[in-house]
Amino acid sequence: MIPAIATLVVGLLIGYMGQRSTFCTISGIRDLILRRNSYRFRGLVGIIIGGVIGFTVFKFIGGDVPSFPLGMDIVSPGILIATIIGGLGLGFWSVMAEGCPYRQHVMAGEGRVGAMFYLLGFYIGIAYFFIVTVKWLDLLLSIMR
Image (tube, rainbow, N blue to C red):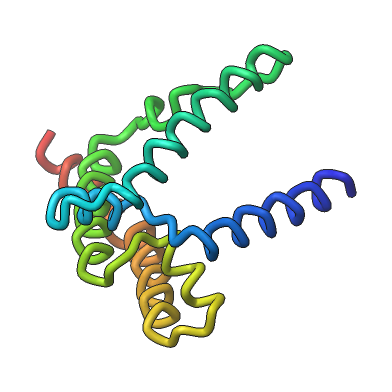
C-alpha cells in the first residue's frame, strides 16, 4: 500500500511541476537551436543532473538497478534497428507537434484536444511497433543470415 501511495504522491508532484514549468525535452533543444532561448533547455539539463544525483544517492543507500545501463541487453538486431527508427520518428513527430510526449500528457490533462489526439496516435504507434515492426524486422534479419 505504501508504494502505491508514494507513486501517487510523486506522480502528482511531477505532474504539477510539469504543468507549472512547461518542461519539455524536445522543444528545449528546438528552442535553443532555433530561437536561442535556453529556458526549456535548462530544464533538460536540470533533469539530467537530478537523475545523476538521484541515482548516486539511491546506490549510496544500498539500492540496486538490475541490468544497468538499461537497453544494453538487447538480444535481437531487429529490435535495435526498429528502436532507432522508432526513436527518430518519435522525435520528428514530437517536434512537429511542438512538444515531447511528457508535455503532451500535461497538455492533455489540461484538456487540449490536439494533445489527446497526439497521445492516441502515440499509443497506437507503440502497439504497432511491438506487434508488427519488431516481428517483421526479426523475420527479415533471420532470412538474411
